[in-house]
Amino acid sequence: MIQELQLRILPEQAANEQSIKQYISREKGIGLNEITAIRILKRSIDARQRTIYINLKVRVYQNEMPEKDEYQYTVYKSVENKPQVIVVGAGPGGLFAALRLIELGLRPIVVERGRNVRDRRKDLALISREHTVNPESNYSFGEGGAGAYSDGKLYTRSKKRGNVDKILNVFCQHGASPSILVDAHPHIGTDKLPRVIENIRNTIIECGGEVHFETRMDALIIEDKEVKGIETNTGKTFFGPVILATGHSARDVYRWLVSSQVEVEAKGIAIGVRLEHPAEIIDQIQYHNKNGRGKYLPAAEYSFVTQVEGRGVYSFCMCPGGFIVPAASGPEQVVVNGMSPSNRGSRWSNSGMVVEIHPEDISDNPSVLSVLEFQEELERSCWQQGGMKQIAPAQRMADFTRKKLSFDLPDSSYSPGLISSPLHFWMPEFITKRLSAGLQQFGKTSHGFLTNEAVMIGVETRTSAPIRIIRDRETLQHITIKGLFPCGEGAGYAGGIVSAGMDGERCAEAVAAYMESNV
Image 1: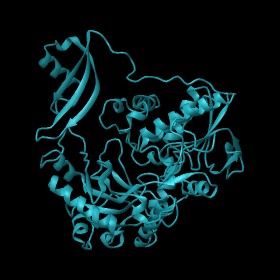
Image 2: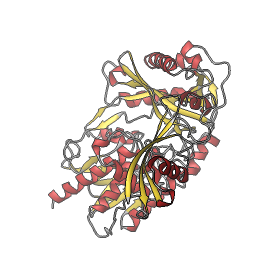
Image 3: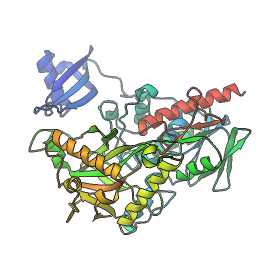
Image 4: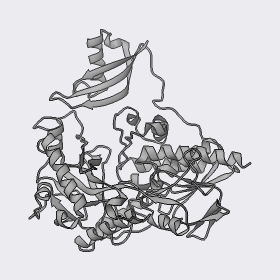
């Protein structure tokens, strides 16, 4: 017999399978020896009240065993000698586009400007150790894209755009823990994700596709307003329709598109800082307990949002038990981002704390590159504040709201180092004024959040793309150029790993329809 139950239990009761079985046996009157297995289908934490509960949806097996696998397999067949499609970028948009192309009987040729996900580690280490940024291999560029070494969170609200469960199941098929199918806010972890990405690459190659690293697209080949292929820095030319999934930091691609009269538009983003607290403080606040999370709860998460003078102020990419990392993608930049390992076990918790920016906030007459240039200017200012290294300017949180320079700074997870700096003074006032007001509101609703034990680290600028590459809503092709399929976060149509993956699948399907119509 199989039945599904909704449970609302204490953290210690949800700690392991045996204790859950004992709870079900006691509360539902089922003999403990009759429960041969349970499978958790959904799990979330309800921390709204002083007593914390775990909400579980479980499938209970009585006197029978569950099916072997907890996830659904996708079958990938050989596409050798099939028509080829060029996928530019090996982030989540590009990788899931490539996998979906294989499903549809097309051969993906993936070109990635950066190095493979393992070799990227060496370049990332140099950023912290020697303050050297490789402009082709960094936290933004390389196999896996910006998500590979900046957390691997899989939460998305973009469920109308595609099949979230499909994306999560494909991750499981390639080595991710099946827990991502269960948790309300699924997370793979920076330490686990690289292996999953390697397995996805292996699937692409085993099925007859190609993956080319350290191969940067330098130009699209366009004839009579139709893309025929791409030119690369290696001298190789690849022919076929193009899925352009270059990520939100490929500024050279944006500039090439503008100079080549490919229609794009400026897009609003969000800009601010990384806010880092001791994890213990966030645990105490969110779990309403001076002792913090205790033995059975994970590092606590938070989410804040408000409106200040017509613009959103909100937390972004919250990393409980995580680290702040140097996310510059070129010279004369300091950019910060956050990540968490799978165990979320560090003694800090951080999030982006950002202000919504519209193009008209920057200029009365904004150009298509205004937001991008504003990002660059702010990142360069940060680099200068840090002594022209990857040292990041920082300020204690309460000092920022009081417009006071911090005499010293707390310990931080940011390994290149911090320097005390008056963020309130040199960052643009239309950002700092709203950010300060937002933080003060959050401090009122969450007692203890606004504290000088927390540090604000500049700057968080890469929340999304500053450009949207305009595409047709139905065909997903560029609005004027056939055979070009702008994809994912870098094209302005996604915001995270899962939504980029779903957009990659949609673009692959659109390419298949385009190629079929041209037969």
